[in-house]
Image (tube, rainbow, N blue to C red; front, top):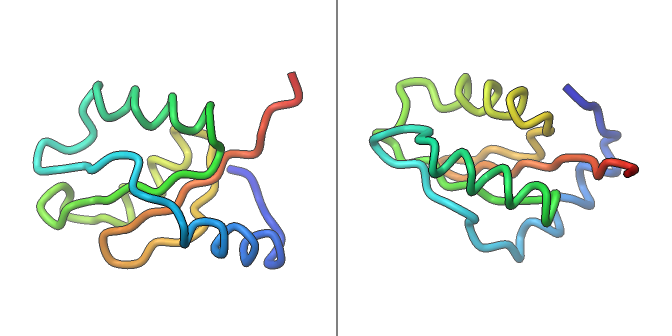
Length: 92
């Protein structure tokens, strides 16, 4: 997983305040459709907000860590049902 400085995280938190959720993860969990939405959003924007409903996972924090690893992203912030993910842009 990638690492960011505390200054970079603060800047990303500020930017994320203006974001609308890209997708909502509901009681069916991380479905292939939601997975595709998140991947496409990260490729396009690098910084996304995801809403995780309370009935989606028993352990939201654990699932957030798994998601960050899966998408090669960093958890900028997770408060309640909101998860902010950031993926450092590739240098292609």
